[in-house]
Figure 1: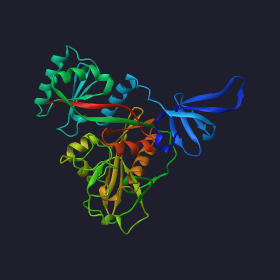
Figure 2 (figure 1 turned 90 degrees about the vertical axis):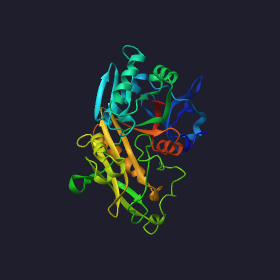
Figure 3 (figure 1 turned 90 degrees about the horizontal axis):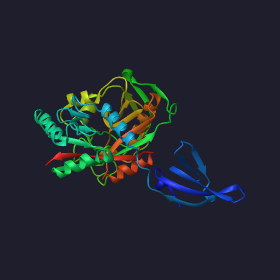
Figure 4 (figure 1 turned 180 degrees about the horizontal axis):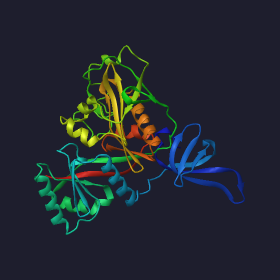
Length: 370
Protein backbone atom coordinates (compact mmCIF):
# COMPACT_ATOMS: atom_id res chain seq x y z
CA UNK A 1 0.00 0.00 0.00
CA UNK A 2 0.95 3.62 -0.26
CA UNK A 3 2.19 5.85 2.53
CA UNK A 4 3.62 9.34 3.14
CA UNK A 5 6.95 8.20 1.69
CA UNK A 6 5.26 7.91 -1.72
CA UNK A 7 3.95 11.48 -1.85
CA UNK A 8 5.15 13.11 -5.04
CA UNK A 9 5.36 9.80 -6.89
CA UNK A 10 3.21 8.71 -9.80
CA UNK A 11 0.78 6.03 -8.68
CA UNK A 12 -1.99 3.78 -9.99
CA UNK A 13 -4.86 3.12 -7.58
CA UNK A 14 -7.78 0.73 -8.11
CA UNK A 15 -10.81 1.44 -5.93
CA UNK A 16 -14.08 -0.33 -5.28
CA UNK A 17 -17.09 1.64 -6.48
CA UNK A 18 -19.73 2.45 -3.87
CA UNK A 19 -22.58 2.11 -6.38
CA UNK A 20 -21.22 -0.12 -9.11
CA UNK A 21 -22.97 -0.43 -12.44
CA UNK A 22 -23.58 -3.91 -13.77
CA UNK A 23 -20.26 -5.41 -14.78
CA UNK A 24 -18.26 -2.45 -13.41
CA UNK A 25 -17.22 -2.88 -9.78
CA UNK A 26 -13.91 -1.02 -9.87
CA UNK A 27 -12.29 2.06 -11.34
CA UNK A 28 -8.64 3.05 -11.73
CA UNK A 29 -7.04 6.40 -10.88
CA UNK A 30 -3.60 7.35 -12.15
CA UNK A 31 -1.66 10.45 -11.23
CA UNK A 32 0.63 12.07 -8.67
CA UNK A 33 0.05 11.18 -5.02
CA UNK A 34 -0.16 14.54 -3.25
CA UNK A 35 -1.34 13.35 0.19
CA UNK A 36 -1.37 9.99 2.01
CA UNK A 37 -3.08 10.08 5.40
CA UNK A 38 -6.59 9.20 6.55
CA UNK A 39 -7.47 10.12 2.99
CA UNK A 40 -5.35 9.90 -0.13
CA UNK A 41 -5.35 12.63 -2.76
CA UNK A 42 -4.25 11.91 -6.32
CA UNK A 43 -3.65 14.68 -8.87
CA UNK A 44 -4.55 13.35 -12.31
CA UNK A 45 -3.00 14.40 -15.63
CA UNK A 46 -6.15 16.41 -16.32
CA UNK A 47 -5.41 18.54 -13.24
CA UNK A 48 -8.26 17.10 -11.17
CA UNK A 49 -7.52 16.19 -7.55
CA UNK A 50 -9.30 12.97 -6.56
CA UNK A 51 -9.84 12.08 -2.92
CA UNK A 52 -9.61 8.36 -2.14
CA UNK A 53 -10.63 6.57 1.05
CA UNK A 54 -8.00 3.88 1.76
CA UNK A 55 -10.67 1.37 2.80
CA UNK A 56 -12.01 1.42 -0.78
CA UNK A 57 -8.61 0.62 -2.28
CA UNK A 58 -8.28 -2.80 -3.87
CA UNK A 59 -4.74 -2.32 -5.18
CA UNK A 60 -2.19 0.53 -5.34
CA UNK A 61 1.35 0.80 -6.65
CA UNK A 62 4.01 3.28 -7.64
CA UNK A 63 4.50 3.47 -11.40
CA UNK A 64 7.30 5.05 -13.47
CA UNK A 65 6.89 8.73 -14.27
CA UNK A 66 5.76 9.71 -17.74
CA UNK A 67 8.64 10.98 -19.87
CA UNK A 68 8.85 14.75 -19.72
CA UNK A 69 8.10 16.24 -23.16
CA UNK A 70 11.09 17.76 -24.94
CA UNK A 71 9.10 20.97 -25.34
CA UNK A 72 8.77 21.29 -21.56
CA UNK A 73 12.47 20.67 -20.97
CA UNK A 74 13.50 23.23 -23.58
CA UNK A 75 11.06 25.86 -22.28
CA UNK A 76 12.13 25.28 -18.67
CA UNK A 77 15.84 25.49 -19.49
CA UNK A 78 15.34 28.78 -21.29
CA UNK A 79 13.33 30.22 -18.42
CA UNK A 80 15.90 29.04 -15.87
CA UNK A 81 18.58 30.75 -17.95
CA UNK A 82 16.53 33.96 -17.90
CA UNK A 83 16.25 33.82 -14.11
CA UNK A 84 20.04 33.38 -13.72
CA UNK A 85 21.37 35.65 -16.46
CA UNK A 86 25.01 35.68 -17.44
CA UNK A 87 26.83 39.00 -17.63
CA UNK A 88 27.91 38.31 -21.20
CA UNK A 89 26.11 36.21 -23.80
CA UNK A 90 26.59 35.48 -27.49
CA UNK A 91 24.40 33.38 -29.79
CA UNK A 92 26.07 30.68 -31.83
CA UNK A 93 23.50 29.29 -34.22
CA UNK A 94 20.87 27.87 -31.88
CA UNK A 95 23.29 27.80 -28.94
CA UNK A 96 23.77 30.49 -26.30
CA UNK A 97 27.26 31.12 -24.95
CA UNK A 98 27.23 32.53 -21.41
CA UNK A 99 29.95 33.99 -19.22
CA UNK A 100 30.04 35.67 -15.82
CA UNK A 101 33.64 35.66 -14.70
CA UNK A 102 33.42 32.03 -13.59
CA UNK A 103 30.62 32.72 -11.08
CA UNK A 104 28.46 29.54 -11.14
CA UNK A 105 28.30 26.83 -13.76
CA UNK A 106 24.98 27.86 -15.25
CA UNK A 107 26.15 31.40 -15.99
CA UNK A 108 29.41 30.13 -17.51
CA UNK A 109 28.29 27.36 -19.84
CA UNK A 110 26.76 26.85 -23.25
CA UNK A 111 23.00 26.42 -23.38
CA UNK A 112 22.81 23.97 -26.27
CA UNK A 113 19.21 22.95 -26.89
CA UNK A 114 19.32 22.54 -30.68
CA UNK A 115 21.61 20.94 -33.22
CA UNK A 116 24.63 23.14 -33.99
CA UNK A 117 24.80 24.95 -37.28
CA UNK A 118 27.73 24.01 -39.47
CA UNK A 119 28.41 20.74 -37.68
CA UNK A 120 29.59 19.80 -34.20
CA UNK A 121 33.32 20.12 -34.86
CA UNK A 122 33.13 23.73 -36.02
CA UNK A 123 30.69 24.72 -33.28
CA UNK A 124 32.75 23.13 -30.50
CA UNK A 125 35.90 24.82 -31.81
CA UNK A 126 34.11 28.19 -31.72
CA UNK A 127 32.97 27.50 -28.15
CA UNK A 128 36.48 26.65 -27.00
CA UNK A 129 37.89 29.80 -28.60
CA UNK A 130 35.18 32.01 -27.07
CA UNK A 131 35.76 30.78 -23.53
CA UNK A 132 39.54 30.71 -23.89
CA UNK A 133 39.43 34.40 -24.84
CA UNK A 134 37.76 35.04 -21.47
CA UNK A 135 40.11 32.86 -19.46
CA UNK A 136 37.34 30.36 -18.72
CA UNK A 137 37.06 26.61 -19.31
CA UNK A 138 34.68 25.59 -22.07
CA UNK A 139 31.62 23.96 -20.57
CA UNK A 140 28.29 22.70 -21.91
CA UNK A 141 24.99 22.41 -20.02
CA UNK A 142 23.42 19.14 -21.16
CA UNK A 143 19.64 19.06 -20.69
CA UNK A 144 18.97 15.36 -20.39
CA UNK A 145 17.34 13.60 -23.35
CA UNK A 146 17.07 16.82 -25.37
CA UNK A 147 20.84 16.93 -25.80
CA UNK A 148 21.56 13.19 -25.90
CA UNK A 149 23.13 13.24 -29.37
CA UNK A 150 25.44 16.15 -28.53
CA UNK A 151 26.21 14.54 -25.18
CA UNK A 152 27.33 11.35 -26.92
CA UNK A 153 29.46 13.33 -29.37
CA UNK A 154 31.19 15.30 -26.63
CA UNK A 155 31.79 12.13 -24.61
CA UNK A 156 33.44 10.56 -27.66
CA UNK A 157 35.69 13.65 -27.88
CA UNK A 158 36.84 13.21 -24.29
CA UNK A 159 34.61 15.74 -22.53
CA UNK A 160 33.77 14.54 -19.03
CA UNK A 161 30.35 14.71 -17.39
CA UNK A 162 30.01 16.31 -13.97
CA UNK A 163 27.37 17.58 -11.55
CA UNK A 164 24.31 15.56 -12.58
CA UNK A 165 21.47 17.73 -11.33
CA UNK A 166 17.77 17.12 -10.82
CA UNK A 167 15.33 19.81 -11.91
CA UNK A 168 12.34 19.57 -9.58
CA UNK A 169 9.13 21.53 -10.03
CA UNK A 170 5.96 22.18 -8.08
CA UNK A 171 2.64 23.70 -9.11
CA UNK A 172 1.91 26.98 -7.34
CA UNK A 173 -1.72 27.31 -6.34
CA UNK A 174 -1.29 29.17 -3.08
CA UNK A 175 -2.35 32.65 -4.18
CA UNK A 176 -3.76 34.42 -1.16
CA UNK A 177 -2.57 31.69 1.22
CA UNK A 178 -0.02 33.81 3.02
CA UNK A 179 -0.54 37.16 4.69
CA UNK A 180 1.97 39.77 3.61
CA UNK A 181 2.62 42.69 5.89
CA UNK A 182 5.02 45.60 5.53
CA UNK A 183 8.50 45.16 6.86
CA UNK A 184 11.25 47.67 7.38
CA UNK A 185 12.87 49.61 4.55
CA UNK A 186 10.32 48.63 1.96
CA UNK A 187 10.61 44.91 2.66
CA UNK A 188 7.77 42.51 3.36
CA UNK A 189 7.44 39.96 6.13
CA UNK A 190 5.78 36.70 5.19
CA UNK A 191 4.95 33.77 7.40
CA UNK A 192 6.80 32.37 10.37
CA UNK A 193 9.83 30.11 10.65
CA UNK A 194 10.71 28.36 13.90
CA UNK A 195 14.22 28.97 15.13
CA UNK A 196 16.13 27.25 17.89
CA UNK A 197 19.26 29.22 18.54
CA UNK A 198 21.04 32.10 20.10
CA UNK A 199 23.69 34.30 18.58
CA UNK A 200 24.97 32.73 15.40
CA UNK A 201 27.48 35.23 14.12
CA UNK A 202 29.95 33.68 11.74
CA UNK A 203 27.94 30.48 11.36
CA UNK A 204 28.77 28.11 8.53
CA UNK A 205 26.08 27.72 5.88
CA UNK A 206 25.14 24.67 3.88
CA UNK A 207 23.17 24.88 0.67
CA UNK A 208 19.79 23.34 0.01
CA UNK A 209 20.12 23.65 -3.74
CA UNK A 210 23.60 22.37 -4.27
CA UNK A 211 24.34 22.71 -7.95
CA UNK A 212 25.78 26.09 -8.86
CA UNK A 213 24.38 27.74 -5.78
CA UNK A 214 26.57 25.94 -3.24
CA UNK A 215 28.92 28.49 -1.76
CA UNK A 216 31.74 26.01 -1.29
CA UNK A 217 32.01 22.33 -2.15
CA UNK A 218 32.89 21.67 1.48
CA UNK A 219 29.62 23.10 2.76
CA UNK A 220 27.03 20.54 3.78
CA UNK A 221 23.89 20.33 1.70
CA UNK A 222 20.46 20.48 3.32
CA UNK A 223 19.80 17.25 5.14
CA UNK A 224 23.22 15.63 4.75
CA UNK A 225 24.91 13.58 7.41
CA UNK A 226 26.95 16.66 8.32
CA UNK A 227 23.83 18.35 9.60
CA UNK A 228 24.08 19.29 13.23
CA UNK A 229 27.83 18.68 13.34
CA UNK A 230 29.11 22.01 12.05
CA UNK A 231 29.76 24.81 14.49
CA UNK A 232 29.81 24.25 18.25
CA UNK A 233 26.17 23.32 18.85
CA UNK A 234 25.77 26.08 21.44
CA UNK A 235 23.58 28.02 19.06
CA UNK A 236 20.93 25.33 19.41
CA UNK A 237 20.54 25.76 23.15
CA UNK A 238 18.49 28.06 25.29
CA UNK A 239 16.03 29.68 22.90
CA UNK A 240 13.65 26.92 21.82
CA UNK A 241 10.34 28.05 20.37
CA UNK A 242 11.40 31.47 19.16
CA UNK A 243 9.65 32.49 15.96
CA UNK A 244 11.70 33.84 13.09
CA UNK A 245 9.95 36.07 10.59
CA UNK A 246 10.82 35.65 6.93
CA UNK A 247 11.55 39.06 5.46
CA UNK A 248 11.29 39.54 1.70
CA UNK A 249 12.98 42.26 -0.34
CA UNK A 250 13.53 42.84 -4.04
CA UNK A 251 17.31 43.26 -3.77
CA UNK A 252 20.00 41.12 -2.12
CA UNK A 253 21.41 42.31 1.18
CA UNK A 254 25.13 42.70 1.75
CA UNK A 255 25.07 39.61 3.97
CA UNK A 256 23.28 37.61 1.25
CA UNK A 257 25.92 38.59 -1.33
CA UNK A 258 28.75 37.87 1.10
CA UNK A 259 27.45 34.35 1.66
CA UNK A 260 26.66 33.56 -1.98
CA UNK A 261 29.20 35.60 -3.91
CA UNK A 262 32.16 33.20 -3.70
CA UNK A 263 34.51 36.12 -3.24
CA UNK A 264 32.94 38.13 -6.08
CA UNK A 265 29.87 39.85 -4.58
CA UNK A 266 29.76 42.44 -7.35
CA UNK A 267 29.32 39.69 -9.97
CA UNK A 268 26.84 37.86 -7.78
CA UNK A 269 24.77 41.04 -7.47
CA UNK A 270 24.59 41.43 -11.26
CA UNK A 271 23.64 37.79 -11.84
CA UNK A 272 21.14 37.58 -8.99
CA UNK A 273 19.44 40.81 -10.04
CA UNK A 274 16.98 43.06 -8.24
CA UNK A 275 13.66 44.81 -8.71
CA UNK A 276 10.42 43.35 -10.10
CA UNK A 277 10.59 39.62 -10.59
CA UNK A 278 13.11 39.08 -7.80
CA UNK A 279 12.58 38.20 -4.15
CA UNK A 280 15.15 37.61 -1.43
CA UNK A 281 13.89 35.80 1.67
CA UNK A 282 15.85 36.07 4.90
CA UNK A 283 15.59 34.99 8.53
CA UNK A 284 17.91 36.74 10.95
CA UNK A 285 18.88 36.10 14.56
CA UNK A 286 20.74 38.64 16.62
CA UNK A 287 21.25 40.67 13.45
CA UNK A 288 22.91 37.70 11.71
CA UNK A 289 21.55 36.09 8.55
CA UNK A 290 20.79 32.45 9.50
CA UNK A 291 18.57 31.32 6.61
CA UNK A 292 17.96 32.64 3.13
CA UNK A 293 16.72 31.95 -0.38
CA UNK A 294 16.08 33.68 -3.68
CA UNK A 295 13.14 33.60 -6.06
CA UNK A 296 13.23 34.85 -9.66
CA UNK A 297 10.33 34.86 -12.11
CA UNK A 298 10.49 34.40 -15.88
CA UNK A 299 7.32 33.59 -17.79
CA UNK A 300 5.18 31.27 -15.69
CA UNK A 301 8.18 29.94 -13.74
CA UNK A 302 9.70 30.96 -10.43
CA UNK A 303 13.21 29.60 -9.98
CA UNK A 304 14.24 29.02 -6.37
CA UNK A 305 17.97 29.34 -5.73
CA UNK A 306 20.47 30.01 -2.96
CA UNK A 307 18.49 28.22 -0.25
CA UNK A 308 20.67 27.77 2.81
CA UNK A 309 20.47 27.44 6.58
CA UNK A 310 23.13 27.94 9.22
CA UNK A 311 24.55 24.47 9.93
CA UNK A 312 23.93 24.91 13.65
CA UNK A 313 20.23 25.59 13.09
CA UNK A 314 19.26 22.63 10.95
CA UNK A 315 15.99 20.71 11.31
CA UNK A 316 14.20 23.71 12.76
CA UNK A 317 11.95 24.43 9.77
CA UNK A 318 13.90 27.42 8.49
CA UNK A 319 14.37 26.12 4.95
CA UNK A 320 10.69 25.20 4.76
CA UNK A 321 9.72 28.67 5.95
CA UNK A 322 11.97 30.28 3.32
CA UNK A 323 10.46 28.12 0.58
CA UNK A 324 6.89 28.78 1.72
CA UNK A 325 7.48 32.53 1.66
CA UNK A 326 9.02 32.42 -1.82
CA UNK A 327 6.23 30.19 -3.15
CA UNK A 328 3.56 32.55 -1.81
CA UNK A 329 5.38 35.50 -3.36
CA UNK A 330 5.76 33.70 -6.68
CA UNK A 331 2.10 32.72 -6.87
CA UNK A 332 1.02 36.25 -5.97
CA UNK A 333 3.21 37.59 -8.78
CA UNK A 334 1.91 35.36 -11.55
CA UNK A 335 4.12 32.25 -11.36
CA UNK A 336 2.25 29.00 -12.00
CA UNK A 337 5.11 26.72 -10.94
CA UNK A 338 8.32 26.75 -8.96
CA UNK A 339 11.55 25.04 -9.98
CA UNK A 340 14.75 24.27 -8.14
CA UNK A 341 17.93 22.40 -8.99
CA UNK A 342 19.45 19.80 -6.69
CA UNK A 343 22.56 17.72 -7.22
CA UNK A 344 21.21 14.23 -7.93
CA UNK A 345 23.54 12.46 -5.48
CA UNK A 346 22.16 14.55 -2.62
CA UNK A 347 19.41 12.07 -1.72
CA UNK A 348 18.45 13.78 1.58
CA UNK A 349 17.86 17.11 -0.16
CA UNK A 350 15.91 15.46 -2.97
CA UNK A 351 13.77 13.69 -0.38
CA UNK A 352 13.21 16.90 1.57
CA UNK A 353 12.00 18.77 -1.49
CA UNK A 354 9.85 15.78 -2.44
CA UNK A 355 8.10 16.01 0.92
CA UNK A 356 7.45 19.66 0.18
CA UNK A 357 5.69 18.79 -3.07
CA UNK A 358 8.51 19.04 -5.63
CA UNK A 359 8.90 16.30 -8.25
CA UNK A 360 11.73 15.64 -10.68
CA UNK A 361 10.99 16.58 -14.29
CA UNK A 362 14.39 15.87 -15.81
CA UNK A 363 18.11 15.93 -15.13
CA UNK A 364 21.01 17.78 -16.66
CA UNK A 365 24.76 17.69 -16.27
CA UNK A 366 27.78 19.58 -17.54
CA UNK A 367 30.34 18.41 -20.07
CA UNK A 368 33.83 19.81 -19.52
CA UNK A 369 37.00 19.28 -21.53
CA UNK A 370 39.39 17.18 -19.43
